[in-house]
Amino acid sequence: MEFLLVFLILPIIIYTVSSISYLLFKKWFIAPLIVFSVLTILTFTTFGETFFFWVIIFTVLSIITSIMNTKKRKSTCA
Image (cartoon, rainbow, N blue to C red; front, top):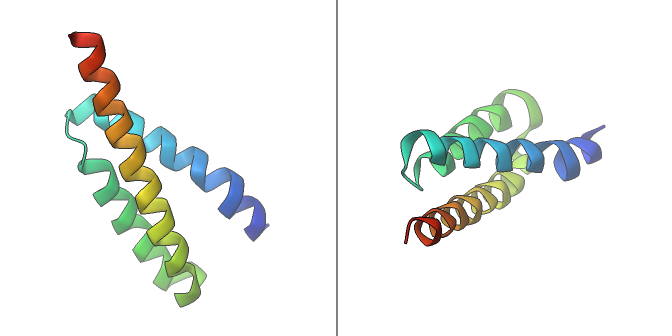
C-alpha cells in the first residue's frame, strides 16, 4: 500500500494541488509551501522520519510543476 501511495497517488495529488493553487493564487511558491508543510506534518504524525526523503522529492516536484505552469501561463498571455 505504501508503494502505491508514494509512486502513484501522492504524485497525482501533488501535481493537481500545484496546478490548482497556481491558478488560484497566481504565485508559483504557494503550492510548494503547502506541500512541504502538509507532508512534514504527516511525516511526524503518520509515516515516520524515513518518509522525509519523499517530502523533499515531492516538494521539488511541486516546484517544477508550479514553474511549468508559470511558463505556460506567460507563453499563452504573450
